[in-house]
Image 1: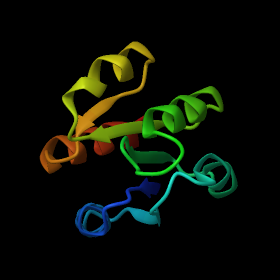
Image 2: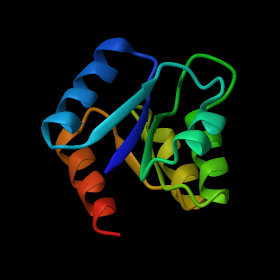
Image 3: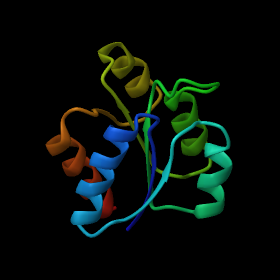
Image 4: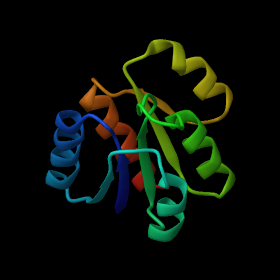
Amino acid sequence: MKILLIEDDESVRNAIQHYLERSGYEVHTMDTSVGAVEEAVRLSPDLVLTDHNLGDCETGLAIAHKLKCKNIRAILMSADSTVRGPSLDMGVPFVFKTDIYELMTMVQAHEDK
């Protein structure tokens, strides 16, 4: 399964990438929201994992919603609990990025779809 991981924090990005690759996933990474939707369309991943607070022009929730509209599956990751409600209201799965077990469980569940 091919995954696009969008995360601006290098240490978090590297850790998540490590867990995913160790589980056999092909992982492509971005450290900014700039061009993320276009890259996802070009790459055609099976799943996009995006952080919410990317520190630049577009939030992860906006990216995930745009991807959902293009039939690209996405999961929103954040340490900010206030994002959970709006994410679920938009039909975008949400996971706390600090909970690697839950993140991996959600990725595996998407693999089966």
